[in-house]
Length: 438
Image (tube, rainbow, N blue to C red; front, top):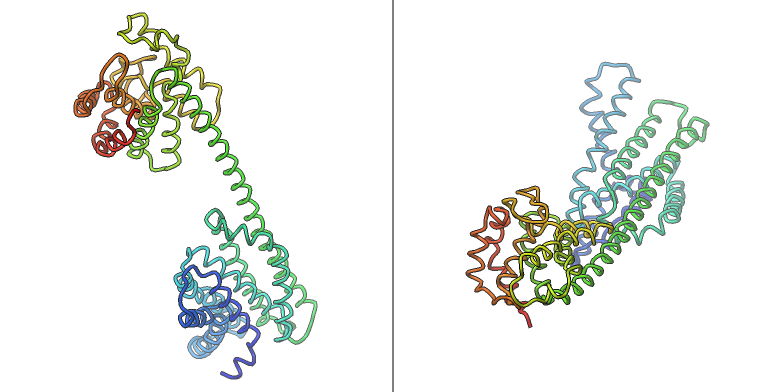
């Protein structure tokens, strides 16, 4: 054991650094004694320690159990031994990586990528160097180069772990590990390659490893760069969507002021819409878009004359025809705006008075020819209109409004949306009672 420590002591120092790093980034915090135990476990799971035991295990098991049964010439036996070591080297890290991820409390693919990175640094310095002192020097130089190349990315990586595409980097690093192992196996094949003697073939072999590592580092750098670009696009799109939301809310406020409807009506319809939309969409982003877009369902009323909008009595047939044009006006007003929220708002404004049976307006659409967004808002809007007091009518009791919505299933409203309405009615009633007209 003493000989092993003397021979491998620089790699054991790297294992200690790995353990300290792992304790620092660990998401689970314990008392000092338990942290010490965890540090020891991290040390034993480290790449260099696993590599050392793997190297000893591979050499002894091959010589004891496999080599005696091989009846080939020496070069073939060496080739089999090299393949045996490469396969077992890769397999040797599977369980340590899994345990490391569990103890660290991190996502497996992230833990695996971090772990393999440390393994590569150790393996690179081990193969390139000629002795213990050379290992320390080469490892230190490699570490400084990595710190210089990726130093500015560390803060970004720590804050955007979930947005980085880890899988390609992990696979690239595994391939690099196999390449370095294969190059290391060349020392068994070619007698002119000697650790203690510098030669042109050795320089050539080391150059291959160095170039491959440079490419791996560049690939990792590119991955971070692409992630930053993606994050910037998402941030821009979020600001763009936020600006659309602000525009919609401003327009909704103007619309409600003209139509005589309260801001609570806009809010209730928006909340009802979000509740119903959850039955049709799993994406929270889409649900939030529909919720905001529903505020614009009556934006076309801005184009309707005030004397008709504000009329207290029953509308004449001609006046009702004019009122019906607000759906087409809504489509026209929103037709020149881009963005997903505005597109949804346009469909809602244009189609929320269409009927499932095809007897609605403005185009007489039928069934699923009507946008699902409009199908949802139609139920939300009518239920709130029935249960709200208007200048031309009193509010219906919620029980009667509920019955009317159910009665219109398959006629005025989509059967699926009515079923969602019935299923979530208690939640809808909570919203109605929470946002009462003032």
